[in-house]
Image (tube, rainbow, N blue to C red; front, side):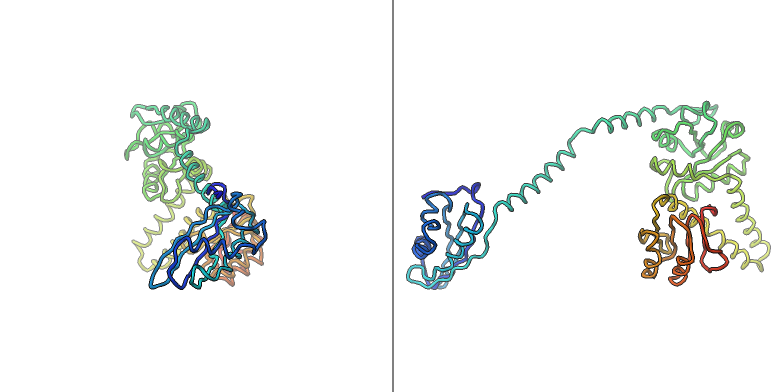
Length: 401
């Protein structure tokens, strides 16, 4: 008889059989051929289909238990799906096998091509992953790696204290001052060459001289240590013009190129920092000298607490420029979601935890009303069409930054 290779089969018919007695495999195969003979006409005769190779070798698996026989019949087919389904239905007409009553039921018709396709997809994923892990970097990646290495090799020693610095200190009108050598290396890696390090807690005379003849920007870490450096340099009389800060909780040596440029663009004048520090110190002096005014000083401090929130709002607003979108924040300044401006009222109405909304547009009465009803504390946007005195919500615009 003709056979069909599993490679050529398109479908596999899986058939369950249950027989009320003990029979052997030849009995099952004989019953199938005998009881379907002439049922479907000469074109779908099982014997002829096997001879022509359109039906493959019929496999029978049997198990005898407690005087009964059960098992499975597997029939590979290269017929089309309609003809294969007809063959499957014809098998179910087999009512006796040998001398015993039987029940034949087609459990499923498996499409081999789907199984093969699934295998191909999964295998292709594995091959692509291996290729991605082993493939050489493209020319752009190679260029970037070489460029970064060259930039980091440009580290020099500057001044009598031999401070770690970039090669462009003398040629630049503006110099960026950082805490240590690792900070210098990170900025050099990202193409910033007019950078120099303090290299310790004492103030080098080289830094004092640079402050007197160049525009000096102090770039500090986003933690309390950065604040201490600011205080130390200001108290030492170093002429610092601007102060830039790394993102909260991050150090200059670890931040990305985007974070570096964003921090430098957001630098503030030293005069503003001095004002902030002066107010805080003044509050402390009042608390120490006049205990009965402690409540008033606490109120002043509460008004200063808005500073870190202002910084957060400014960063988010910078990200939103040109998007006409809005960020919804919770009380811990965590991001709840981003929505179009038009959806702000409905969104905050359904969010009981909405604490602040930052968006690229105008604060109008409709948004203010929705915010008041939803318990929102801050609205931060480019501009406002609502008088701050007309609402209990803190309205913050780009002018406040």
